[in-house]
Length: 453
Image (tube, rainbow, N blue to C red; front, side, top):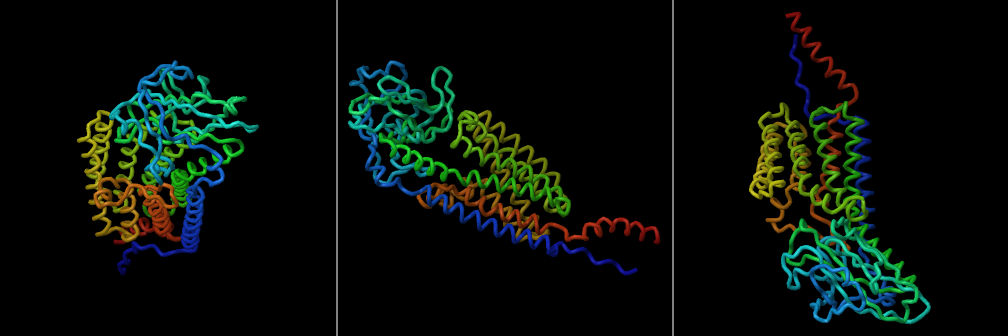
């Protein structure tokens, strides 16, 4: 009997594959257009007529570190407090979302390294008239605040007190009491910075001054602020949704995959990656998660995420190397020790060792892996997203770009490439219809031939 030719490692496209790849391309382009439109809308400056009708409460504020509830009282003597200028340089914005009117915090004003409570106070004159007025709270505060008018608490972000519970600062609007028109009052802002918050040269306290605005201009400005905040984190919501859709695609067509073990671990890695990215939007848009939990998850979640990607890609070239599995788990443990024990050396060993393992896997794929060009491109994009600080920052690639005046991180750009690449790889890896049955019959035929011999 003539020997059978070896099966090709490059799967041929069947109609289902062609439809799926066309759909992936169309959806990717459609989402890209929608994201560009959302960024363009969110990044527009506040309408000039609204800003002209309102007053940015910048300029000098009285400032004092520490905490005393009595500091909210309008008649409290604050003449000996420090003066902090909240006037922003022209065109300034924060380094994350692109929020305008950005001012350095208390660490840039004589209090480096300070964490805890601090108060801001200033006198505000409300114009006379028949309209009601509101204060648009500062859109960026590290890490939470309460806003008082003449000693009366109007609201704030999070809960302050003996056991602070802080959430992400987002646009808030506070209506001034009836009868405030034509009067002068004291606006006091109590702020608190978590001890676990990262220390930077400009960290701490209020970074954008509040805005005094009449109705209905206050409502319109509040909507504009929310549009900017939504745009700032919309990619962190859309990309996780795309990752979950990719998991769904794998579950539906996984039975036809030639690399089922790769697919299983890749789904776990995608789920962890989606959770890590979505975490940013959740804490920035809602009160569902406090900042302490967010910081903890951000510092820990990358460890199982990297381990899952290593275990997945180790199974693209068969057989999987047991040594890579063992090292991936060991490096994950080292990363956990480094994070929980605040051991930077262990953290560096975990990350650099993981990069080395990805390089070994890439060499295996380049030598003998199926669909090596597409697989290597997908692998490279994942590695670049996971290790941008080690691989891209030394090359001068900035961590955040500001298209349309809205911050988009380099990680978000890279995942925008890696997600469709992974989708194409998944679809190209599917066995054509009928091929699975033939592959299942092959072992039986080989056994029959052995019996004949």
